[in-house]
Length: 420
Image (tube, rainbow, N blue to C red; front, side, top):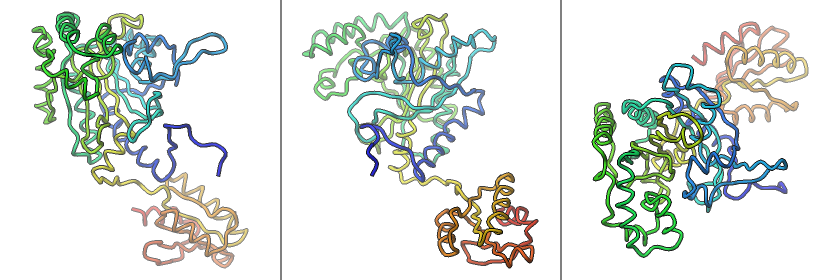
């Protein structure tokens, strides 16, 4: 046993399970790459104020869950708890919004960090794939992102997820609703922390998962009843576009999400097979975030989908992904001359795009063939001194057991033919 273990609330991705995570990332990013989204990668830590301003000082993420620290030089930094603020900061810093082609469409993948009570489906280190469309206010853009996420999940074989949809209004109608909600909340029996949250951002109280709080929220005013005409029309267009694309959704007037920057469209992907941690991803429009972090007005929309949660959802539905074998061909040399010759053959096969491995460590035939079978390879290339003297190798089908001699200079061609 090693002296050290992974920190509490974290996990290691190791084969063969890691192959499913890679497949999920590829499936989620695939539709984005086909829709004009370019890849962006940001540092694992940022100035703590970026998240305090952007995510919101009243959120649990900032007040309780952020890994914040001070460097030797006195800089106050935080491990990134989410992706949107970092991606927007990167886009602004690189002046991507000035290139003249809005929206700027970006996708990303990486690890994020929150200090919270570890449980299945909720970790202190977790993986997400996200997408942001920066600099355009268009209901078609909101619908596009929801459709792309829906199509990614369908391509994985997921069926039992639901899309919850709501509108949070804008700077015109939100203040009216905020006042009505605060008046309602001040009449409830709330603890001190929740009262303080109601003063800073009352919508966050609606997101409180505690049953005693939810019980008191019955009869709370709903934002949909306070939306201005422009927000109503915008939200109706999003709904119509989703319906036309055949994407089912559920209107959820209490959906607010856990971040302060959302405006208008907000949505969440949930899977009922995951128990209390049912959200697998979500997002929404954040028209004021750029200004919050010192940039110009850039209406934007985006989402992040949890890779960990998606893998759990696949397991809950019993979906087995069709993963390509990490090894298609396994080379087994018998003797030093065969070792040098087959190593060259392995290199040739790899350069031809064929996943190939080698029996390292001078194993005997029996142990080397065990390694070949464990590798998942379809074919084994076996050669000894007599084979090489005749200018051939033995190509063995590991499924049928059939073995045939193949000329050494045509191994790659024959292997490609056999693998189809």
